[in-house]
Amino acid sequence: MRDLNRLELAGEAVRAALEALTCADPDWVAQSVDVTSWSRRYGPRVDNWRLPTSRTKQQKLAVDFARDGFALLGAVYHPSSPVWLRELPAVQVLRCVLVQNYTRTTRGAREVVKRREKTDEGGDGRPPGHLRLSSPYDTDTRWSAKRDMLWNGYKLHISETCTPAPEAARTHPNLITNVATTHSTLPDSKALDTVHHALQQRGLLPDEHYLDSGYATAELIHGSIKTYGIALVTPVLLDTSRQAKAQAGFAATDFTIDWDAEKATCPAGHTSATWNPVVSEGIPKTVVTFAALDCIPCPLKPQCTTAKKNRRQLSFHPRQMTEALRHARTQQKTKDWNTDYALRAGIEGTIRQATAITGTRRTRYRGLAKTHLEHIYSAVALNLIRLNAWWNDRPWTAPAPATSPDSSTPSPHNHNGQQDRCACRKPHPGRSRCTSVFVEDTAEAIVSAYVEAG
Image 1: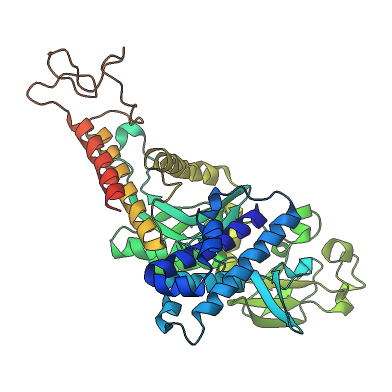
Image 2 (image 1 turned 60 degrees about the vertical axis):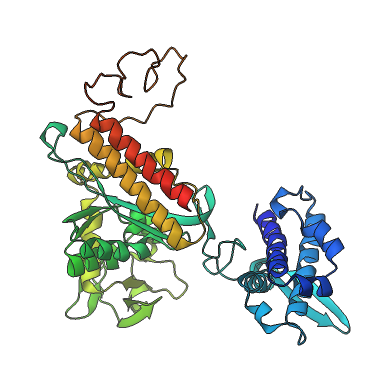
C-alpha cells in the first residue's frame, strides 16, 4: 500500500501542477509542453488508472512521473518563463513532492532519477512522517497508523461532560464541550494542553479529566494539576524496563530515592555513585548510576542488571513527576480506580454517534481549518440531538430512514387527508411536529447547510 500511494501521489502532483499552469497561462503551456502526449498521460486523474501490479513496472512508472515533473519544473524555472508561474501553489507542491520522494544526480552526461527509500533498506532516506506530503490538493493531511488502522487525514479529539450519578438523579445530559482537530501524526499527549487551554478560555475546565492511555505522561499528570487544577484520570503506561516486563528482578520502583541528598539506594543497600541531571528529547531527567565495584560482587546482580558495564543505571523524571507517576501506577491497580475509570466509556459512544450521524470518519473539505469547522458543526448537531432527547424525556436513538408513502411503516406525514402525524408517530393538535423532531431536523439542517455551503 505504501508504494502504491507514493506512486499515485507523484503522478497526481504532476497532473495538478500541469492543470494549474494551463489555467494560469495556457499560451505558455502550449509553447513549453508537448500538449498532445502529456494530455494522454495526465488527462484523467491518476487514481482512476489501472496501475501496474508488477513492482518493476511500478518503479518504472514512478521514475517516469518524476522525470516529467522535473522537466515541467525545469520549464517553469527557465529564465524566459514568467517568474510568477513559480509561485503557483500546485507548482510548489510538485517541487516538494519530488524532493521528498526522489533523488536526481548526474553521472557524466547522464541524469539518474531514483526513488527515495529508507536508510535501513539501503536507500537515501525519506523525510519524517509529520513533514511528508500525502496529497497534492490538501497539504495539511498526513498518513498515520494506529495499531492495525492506516489512514490519511487528521485526528479528532472530543471532550464531553460526564457524571457518576444514576440516570434518574441527573440534572442535565452529557454534552460535548470541546473538539480539537490536529494533524494525524501529532501524538495525543501533544494535543492535551491545547484542549485544556480551549476549555479554560470558555470557563469549562473540569475537576477531573478521564482520558485513554495515549494522553498520559508524567509531565502532563503533574502539569495539568499545576497549571489548570485538573486531575487526570488515565491509565499510565507501565514501567517498560526488562525487569518490570518480566516481573522478575528489581524494577525502578524497588529503588529508594533520597531527592534531598541526591542519592538512590538499591535493594541490596548500596547507594548510587553518580547523580546527573540531563535533558532528553527536551524533557529534564536525572540519570543515576551505581558503581561497578558494588554491582559486580553483589549476589543480587543477576536480578538487577545484565549490562555489559556491570552496573545498574536508572533514569528518573523530576521529583514531582516521578512521585505523580508512581502514585498513578499504584492507583490504577485498585478496584476502586477501575470502577471510577469506567465512567470514560461514555465517550466511546459519543465517537460512535459522531461517525454514524455526522460522518466524521471522512472530511468533506480540504485543509485543517475547514475540517475543524466541520467537526464543530458536527458537535453542535450531536448536542442538539441530545438536548432534544432530554427535553422530551425519551432515550436517544438513531434517526430511522425515511419511508415511502406506500410503505407499511407510517411515513413522517401521512397522505390520506387525515390529521398530520409527526415523525414520532404521535398526533400534536395545532402543530405538525413536536419539539424533539424539530430539534433533530434542525441538527440535520445545520450539517446539510454546512455541506452545501462548502
